[in-house]
Length: 259
Ligand code: BV8
Ligand code: ZN
Image (cartoon, rainbow, N blue to C red; front, side, top):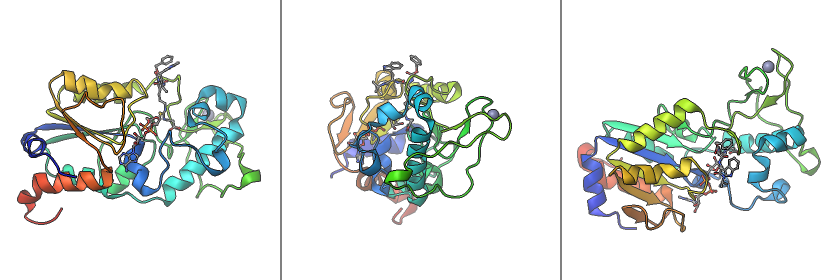
């Protein structure tokens, strides 16, 4: 994949850069993307039907089991070269804002700071009633066909159900995070959109907000998305390949060595 010289020049000159990531940035860490067909225990469910307040209301043990299965995958995964390249960018960009739709903590584990989680975090569950944070003890249980359901823990503070610390469909995004992401998109020189199908709103609208505000926008994704044709640069390929190449081509001269 050839990285356009024009994009490199604009990125090198940029003061304010936003990196906006979706599930595709964690794909090369072995984390299934959100909309790819679910496998194994969960193949008869769609993520969108499980990631809702009504699903948790209807069957808390099924939904909590799904999140514990996903949390186990996150805990056993490692950041991949895409996460590491984004973390490396912090050393070169005067003001970098990393906004993610992902609920995993792989950006933080790769060394990124102040990650803006628009859809919450799978490693930060809380009480549904009093919102007291809950610290899961140890790793999630290994799930088998007949132990797919796990009763969610109860809050030691008020006895309410502990729920995943994520934003479900139909729930509002956290105000501070949404405002920070919006402001960063409106005021950036370069906006990199990495590994998202761009179908979930309002997050999916950020790339166009940046584009309309005059930013240089680039999308990194091996497949077609809703943003095709609406960005300055469309880099069709894997984030774990393109991002390290982009960082290398843009800043190798600064370090003189491979990044
Ligand atoms: C809201 C957390 C205001 C949970 C997620 C009816 C009622 C209420 C709202 C709505 C409604 N109808 C529509 C809406 C809006 C709704 C929405 O947008 N629905 C969509 C489906 C149409 N949005 C909401 O509900 C939001 N809230 O609107 O609040 C409100 C409130 C009340 C009433 C009215 C309005 C809340 C949305 C948040 C949902 N929670 N996650 C969890 O994770 O379990 S969203 C979920 O989707 C994940 O966070 C995920 O990150 C996100 C986006 O998906 P992607 O990241 O793009 O993942 P996907 O699998 O789709 O694509 C992966 C991409 O990676 C692909 O393109 C692939 O090609 C690419 N890829 C693969 N490998 C690689 C790669 N790219 C690069 N490199 C690779 N190697
Ligand atoms: Zn409580």
